[in-house]
Length: 291
Image (cartoon, rainbow, N blue to C red; front, side, top):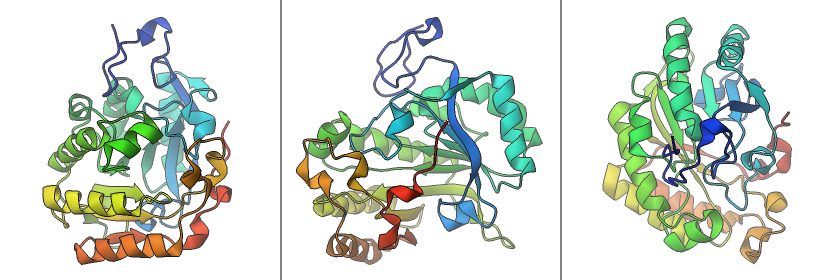
């Protein structure tokens, strides 16, 4: 069947080995499975998040720090049984959650797997995505995902078209976020360990020379969803190391303190609560090694 899992609707017959826009067929291709310490504090905790990095991506941003795997060019093929075993081993190793990173192009394949292992898990399942997802696919996840961790990258179609070939990004991401909030309308933080158990955390990565777009995005999110339905993670970790071949010269530098602080001030004025990042987060050293 032609693949219609994501908003690209590329129609690739992936079960026959044809690669979709995401760069993968229907077999799980996994680039890294390990405890991961560099998520938000309520996700990483002391032991780390049990991160499963999938190869391929349906957005493929020009500045992607995980471009080594997001283009679908690396990763190890795993059967559903092998992936289940590795996920359960993360829990045994002390992972605070099972963190599925860039999983959207495997949604239909992951649902039956999650349904099988969910009764065996004592930790939440985190859906860590680009935000560019179809509502129909997200509905399949109801009951098996506890925490949604979407990026909401752009407000302007100009930026989303240039950097991610997705002029409809904000419209699509807004609908996706609405569905995530329908499924998980309340943020629940554990009492003893201070870790998130349910809810939505919205990430936004500030890009160089795009602070006004970030401000407009935050205002639009406040207007559509309010400021207390999710936690906001305002990130300043952008590094130009992965965009030096980009024709967009603004992407060849880091975000300035003025840019980040001015957007952070708007977030506070709008009443958002959540997380901010220090300037030393803008380093390629925080990108994990992939298989």
